Amino acid sequence: MRLATAFFGVVLTFMLATAAHGRAPVFATPDQAHLIRAARSLQDGFERDAFDKFLLAARYGNKEAQKNVGLMYIKGLGVEKDWAKAHAWLRLAASHGDPRFASARDEIWGTLREDEKLAAESHYREIRKEYGDLAALELREEWVRKQKREVTGSRLGKVGAMRVQVADATGYQWEFSGTEFFSVLDTYVTDLKQHVGEVEIGEFEVIEGDSVSQDDGQ
Picture 1 (tube, rainbow, N blue to C red):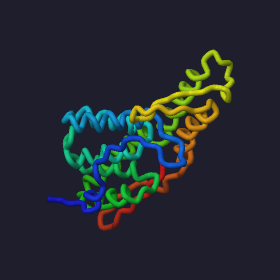
Picture 2: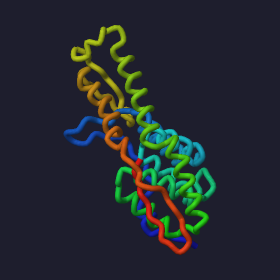
Picture 3: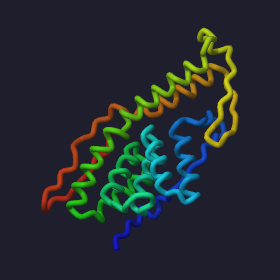
Picture 4: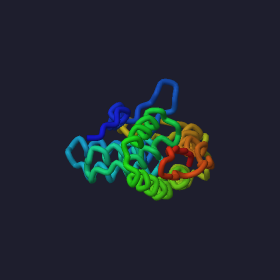
């Protein structure tokens, strides 16, 4: 029976979006909305539906969702257990340097057989194309453009004079000036953009008798 001690310190969590003191609230961005729906589905016992919704959130570059996909592969919730795929998803989740996710990723790596390590690397390359930061950034930019178009409407783009009400992922209504709202929208893009363009130095290379190292840029 394989155990990953770091993994058990990374709990399958479902965060409700709340506003930290002095910070702009996280309103219902697509990834946060899908994350909340996934949590509700899992709590209601609909494991496969929860897994699918975590995937939707993960598509927007949400690292919490990517981590949860990996943990569901380990637990066999809504999907068959697969430690190689779990490692790939935790590797993607850890790509921004979160030490919790990196610790779980590294712990799991140590439990894999050589064939599973190769499978983990292959799956990582596959999911990075669809769920990596570059793909997620395009989705975020497209969503932000749509929100801005819908808000301005026929107002001829006079953003500063507008008052905008939006709900966060918990349903709470926030009111912004047009300028504030556009700034929050832009942050949804810039927060991810800072990670895009990083270069991954090498790929996994499994050589019999040698140790294996990892680099986790996008």
